[in-house]
Image (spheres, rainbow, N blue to C red):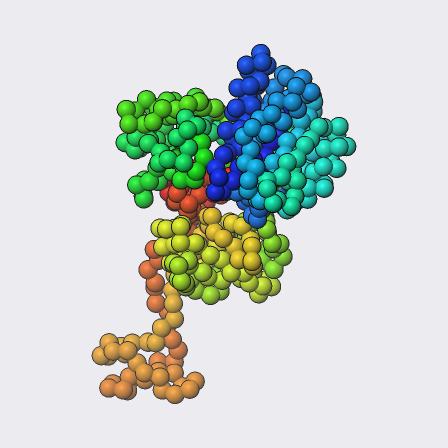
Amino acid sequence: MTVIGLDDTDSRSEGMCTTYLASRLAARIEAADGRVDRRLLIRLNPAVAHKTRGNAALALHTDLPAAEAVEFACEEIDTLAIGTDARTSPGFVVAPGDPTAIPDAVSDFARRALREQLDLSTAIGLADDAGYSHRGWAGEGCAVRGRGRIGALAAVGAWHAFDEWTTEHIAYREFDRCGTPRAVDETAVFDAAASAYPTVWDTVDRGAGETVCVPNAPGPILFGIRGDDSAAVERVAADIAAADTTEPVDCSATFLTNQGTDHHLTAGRIGALREGRSYRVDGVVSEPPETRRGGHVFFTLENPETAAAVACVAFEPTKRFRDHVRAFRVGDRLTVCGEHTDGTIKLEKFAVRSLVRTERVTPTCPDCGRRMKSAGRDQGYRCRDCSTVGKDKVPRQVERALEIGWYEVPPSARRHIAKPLVRGGFDAPSHRER
Ligand code: ATP
């Protein structure tokens, strides 16, 4: 067996997609009578600055001898990778042997690649120690050659490192249509999505009436169907492809992925959060939500034991999720999840642990029912008309729009690696978006 890891072949402006390059490489292997047993689509640390979009890396598990795998990978990257973008830094790593017999140092690297910022020199050192072949390229003007070897090595280690897998079936466009508007039958997408939910998830955003499975970026993907079961995602994809107004599907592939797993999150503590990592953090709302320019909603969360605080934000594209965030009150206890960068947690989901149910208000007069006035500093309250007095503010019930449990961003704003609530396994009731 041979494992081929690939990464960083595409460009935000020029298109391409490493999943497509991996699919072409797989087709090439099969045309040479090789077998491709598995295709992995691995999402890495979403906080990495130089990612193109979703920080994906790819691995193929094949029976092709390593030397041929190297030759084929070089040819496909030479032909397809974008060479004109200074941000594109393609690379591959080829590991001879069984994908489960990966050295611990490499599978550990794969786990860290989801949560930390790693160096190219570390990746190259590990690949050399393990006796792997690797090669790097650099887009025009790119100062780093073969940064993609970080993701490629992580993809090589992934099968050994992780034990929870979801699936995505990707349908590709005819190549000369790339860059033109995509034609995908919306009714077929909504019908197929409904027929397979919740095994198949994040195909559409029902609340917004949007087809989430059809990307906007330039590039060869027509649509991608995600879920827990390969047969189910393939069925949904076939229904969409069969619709009259869907453009022809050129080729397609099913990947095993770590999408929808939350494997990027680690337990964190406010006051000890590091930049460029994603956390699950407990705290108490200490400053109320405020909607700022652009529609982003900010609030402050505090560690009640240390009084350390962190800013949290629900960005504008999270749309209706922001209404839940706007409903927070100072004193609410939460668990929040998201990436921590620039000292701010970018919310992906949160759990309400307890809600403030009362507030202290000026007392009303028991005789006339009107609100009392302050009788002076530390002198309590008085009714000007009836002369009745009240010592302190009194508790009043507040209506809350939130309930205990987990809330999430809608499918249209979901990060690839974030776990949709519908997948289950959460420690409180789920208020799902679909
Ligand atoms: P797309 O989703 O469109 O395929 P992308 O978002 O995957 O693109 P890439 O073009 O692959 O983005 O760029 C990501 C780069 O970051 C790659 O070079 C990859 O090796 C590197 N990288 C991935 N994870 C880490 C990490 N944890 N630390 C440092 N670099 C990383």
